[in-house]
Image 1 (tube, rainbow over the protein chains, first blue to last red):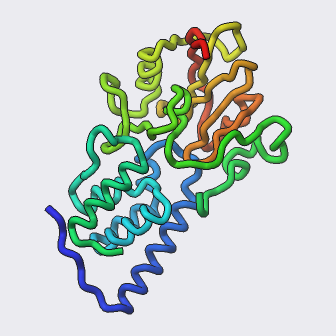
Image 2: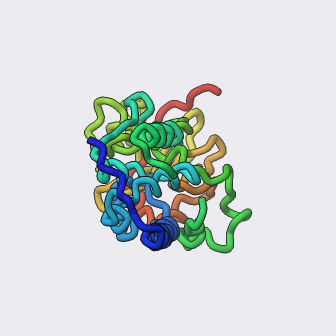
Image 3: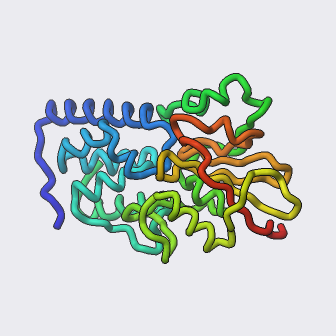
Length: 110
Length: 149
């Protein structure tokens, strides 16, 4: 079930975006070269992004569009869904495309 | 990859020897990881986690014994070392404890190829340069007959 899209005041959106961007940058610079998706997702910055809650879903979708990366764990935890067809499993571009398509269908904007 | 730590930051053994004992072979990409690359694939990221590619019949988990099984199903068998043998393709499995962290593929000339997570794939003369905090130690060698090009 899709979660409702939060309605935030513009200053809250700016703060949210700044915090999100900082955590994304921290995660990318600090995660090293690990192959484990679990270890990537357990990184403190990644966990803090998840802890920000469903309001970061459009930001994650925008990040997938800017530079596809392993945000799928976070999106799955925050939304409870997995829109990626089995035949596309592991294909990062197709996984990103499936999530963005799902986001548009849910009415997210980014 | 925006903001990522450099290879030399992650592997001190590489520092200062770029172009001497190791070389970048491709641009960084998140499209595939070392598990895929060692099996000739550049279109998927292998992971036992939901949503990612993991071969059917292989227990889900990155325990090194699962990666041994995965490669056995691809025709590899455990062997004693990474020394170059005519007509033989070898891989080296790295592990941190019991978790497989990396697979390096031996090229025809005996050098090694490694796809370093989301970063470059590199060619390196020694397997030891990747031993350390990121990848742990070399846990196993495996080999199979080298496929004809």
